[in-house]
Length: 430
Image 1: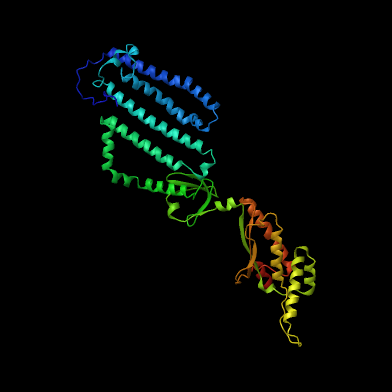
Image 2 (image 1 turned 90 degrees about the vertical axis):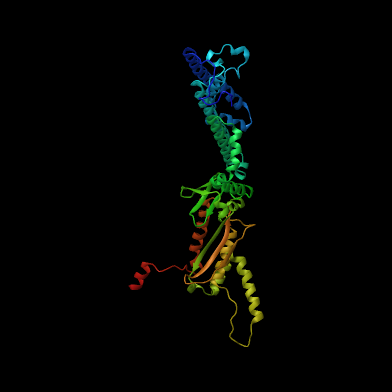
């Protein structure tokens, strides 16, 4: 800082500028500040806008950020005031003679100009810190227009950089107000390390978590994540230093500490989206009292049914061969293998799924299986993957499959199990 920034109480032998000189000085300060503001706003900024507009580089678009431009324009008048209050230190000798007498004084520190000088320098440091912060925000906005920003977000690192900028600015402001050197305060920070670690504990933990999330590619903006036990289930809309914002499916916004995503398990559905297949896993509960062997006329009918024709021919041949080989003869009663309506239904379902263009036919599991029988019947589980991961489309595909199968069950002599309703009890009572 300028050598003239010392305490007001310091004695000096310099002659105090007259009241007329001080009035002229104030008028010159105001005029120069206003003039510098409008020159920057009306002349220089339009030139910068034109140059940026013609440029094909996207990163120079950050120069057009409204907040950054506003703070730079505010900075210009105070810089002009600083130059004038510095007297001949920053003015060429050829122009120094044109300065008002008050600005050519050897020492202004014994007048009311000294506090004005300090206040002006504090404002300059504050506006510089805000301008740097705005430029960092503008850089992040431009960076987010690139695809890589989803995989490698920089917001957490940039927030740390902004924190350092404001911390350094605070040290400079304190140095200006106390008249001490910046090195004096920086040296003192070493003794306060333990206190600083305690104060910034959450920030340090968040920084470590942010680095781990980014380097391990655990979370990106746009990912669908689910955190068990918290009710958080939705799309990630922002990954910052301290928090991760998730928009739930009910359009509410959940804010989760970044460190929590490292400390607790969560589910990321990105793999599902990238694979292009979304799992369908749902069961039909069959009333076990309707399961039986097929009659001869039913076998003949199903053998003519296109989706089951190949299955029926193969199965009939297999059963005939098996029964002939294992027939005990001698008119003994035995239990030959026979076709069941449930087994035929399973064969029909798998064939139906294979002919469904809305499902993945290769590279992903497709099966129909029986689960453990229970009081609610025998579950027949359908396990496959739709080729559309959009929620609404996925639900439509799944509903179409089960609509069809529920309507098809009576043709196989089967019935879905369901709990008795009030109408069932009413029918029984009549």
